Length: 630
Image (cartoon, rainbow, N blue to C red):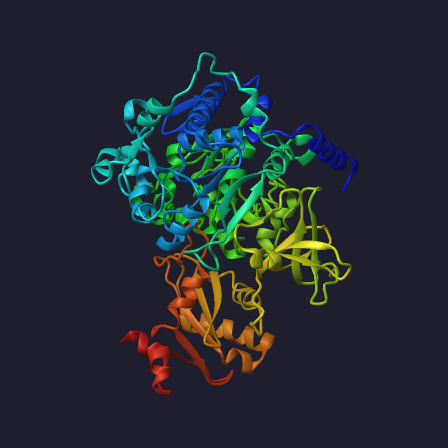
């Protein structure tokens, strides 16, 4: 940790013991006429944002919400979500933001755990959770329509939204079934406070938070349990530190002040709240709030919001590329506004990077600023996880570096960390690994979560000690640090695996001419290799699978590859996703080994490919090429 970092951290501890949004407004005092939020064509300036946040803060205080109270929230990305988040910050309360697609009983548990008499939801999600809400002690249900902040309630992008879901006001329909539903207007009439001076912050409210106070309870991405993801507690310090460390003099990267950032990841993800909302407000960015989160709508989301910077999962990017290349309705679409396209949460494989770069060139991303399309770039320059609070998130780092020519030779580009983050890779004995030695990634920073709510066992497992007794936060992934101090994340750790699945996937993905994506899961002691070929190429599955099998045989031996089963996913069959848009390996495990999976038999000189349904009945003479013709 360098002296500049130490000085910055000491300054935060001494001078920033206040609420997050009070700090945001202090930093934006000269930007009140600058646009803060963009929502379906409506522009909301920083001065208006502050006015709304303070109105909401007085509203919540008048209702009876105080410092430390926990408020359950189930909302899509819309201005009212930011207002509410800001108000909760100002008061010193806690926001428990959960997803509508969680298990119904788990939602009941979440709401009851808040011990709150009020809940906030948007009308697109409330009907999904209403049964669970009715089984709690919640008295007041404030339902906000996604149309409330539209100009005159009219969605100017209805045509682009209509293919998936047109934004419309559903409040009246919801109220028919529950008399305790309140619209936001009705809630304001009941509890609105004084607003003589919209920029006045009540000192009793402003100074209620401290750096150690819990501000949010968000939820993990659901990679291990998508219906009941773990609840993650972050304190005020986590958000203020990360926001300040985006300053150019600390991060060493260009300012975000003139960027439009799209917030579209579900609000229950800390990635969305921190990386797409609070960090950006700290930096004076403009935030485009996108309420529709669906990979089939993603291209339209980009065209509606025209962001210059966006984080999205690799599945969303790949779906966008497929849409542009294969849907005639989008053949002439250009995106010169998009300067920084980032893949977050999971790295893109070399084949995926190449395909997405082809997409970048096609739509001329960044041309408004760079005059030429961005490509070649690597999109996997953001990473980390919700628990670590955007630990590896370094905007613009080496964006146009010559090192990114790795796209041409399949080399990976390591993630960069802030100096305030201590990242180490440990071996099985808890010792620090050598350069390029694969081990368990651990990391500590002021932005690391406080713990999992109501889950002491999981929290204890998350924090481990190295061989020197130093307490570290476990990323639960394999990885290594290269000679340039780049962090390389390889795959999730499963102690029961004979071979880590990422090692198998790495061998599969070496065929960059044919294979684009790969996920490997263990099903009943078999390794099921789900792979997708590069779109629009001539496919000879026999040759592709035999080539993969031979490479793996040399790497792992015949005994191991005898447990391999191949599942070819065609280019129109998406991988199952979690609620946050990451690949859902649990769904792949639950799918098991389907009849159309492929088993490789015989030795190197006489390989036979057989459908799993044939293999199960021991029809060993059935050649896959003959089966496929049938």
